[in-house]
Image (cartoon, rainbow, N blue to C red; front, side):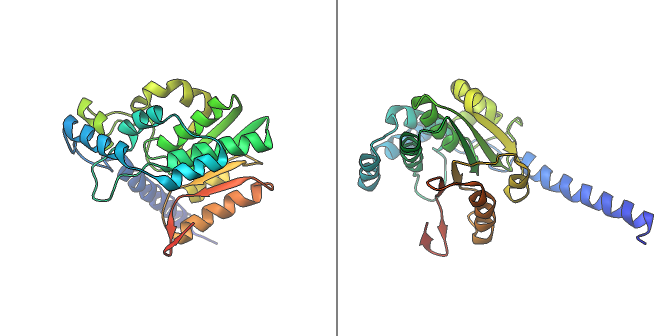
Length: 243
């Protein structure tokens, strides 16, 4: 029989580990201060807008749907234009929008259930919400991330110059879309996906941990809840293979 004092110790240990894990994501996980001035962020945004992506153009032409670029670039200014070493690229917003609109037009569902892992600042979720709104269809996007939604922090974006914000505040100009379609859920996707009561998942975007084991675990939570023609959208590199 397991001694009572050891049960209590184990309980305290688990609570301590969880508290530390949560503290990590509440303690300036992205940056401790603004990384650039407004001019630099606008410069990055301008450079990103000028880049050409013929493959993405062809994809949109093939599926007959394309997102409003002015709308997407404005959203990207607050959610994708960041200071980092790698090249800025948020064209997945175009791919998600086009793919989801095409799926809706071909399958004509009455309601669309969507799962996303890796919310970050909310760019991808809003691109999918825009697709639902433009298609005039009901649906729900449950998006998961370890980053909190209602905790003020710096996000490594132009909005940091106004002080710390919650993700909710960061996306205030898109309140009508977040309220209508999006549920922000905090937690590790490997444990939280199991808790989501969604029998059918029509569309999923897996962009959380870019790790083969993690990605496959997420996929195996999604795939059994899909029917023929449903979509799992993977925007990542796994073992040097583009999926």
